[in-house]
Image (cartoon, rainbow, N blue to C red; front, side, top):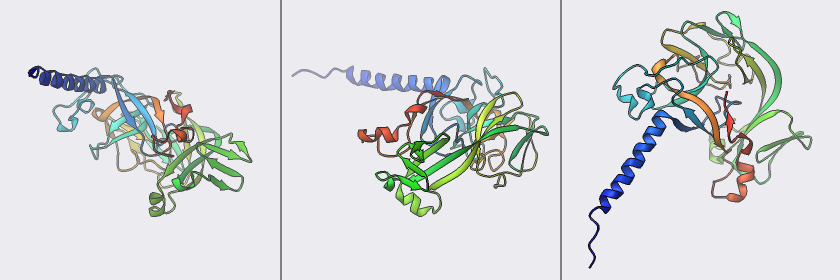
Length: 292
């Protein structure tokens, strides 16, 4: 009877060990994948986007590695300073089990305030122009086969139609389980917003959306960013828990990296195994899209 190879277990262990080691090194030093679970960065990032984050851009802290919450050391090495306008993933300073993605608005020493929905940095109003209609559609999955109809609007799969023509404005569509829509009344509907182009003091331009200019976070005190910290806001200005709220100022060490691009995106229309639904599920136009 042939004997078992005594090296088989060792080879199996080495394969698992070195595979895991390579994955940890890759995620810690090069690129780390994240998925977007909330709409706080609409229109830049949609719910269901899967992104890659550059880990080398701002250097490395203990949070760049597994078990960063163990507080083995403080500070960053190979560090460079993030720039206003960068879209960044960071560790929540209030709850270290959470990673957030927001746009950097204020560096150390900057004064940031929102008044009547308008952003002010160092006492100067930030330019906001080019207003356009924007639709945020959060729909129950039960209407997938029939679509959503309201006045002159129709929503089917990944598309919005106005007067039987493809919509000429931007929009986001997400499908939720019926149980969610029934539990959280008012969460599933078609919401009207306005998309603006915002120009930050350093010339960085990006899109934001506003539901109104008198929402909960549209009037704040003036925040002065302390040394070693940053001020972040979501591009969905009326639906973002950020530095205006409980997150507060984010320490430099908590920064994980800059968002690079969307490598996959879907709207939760149906399970991945249902191949025939991919046309209505996958947002093909977002795959490979760079983030700025």
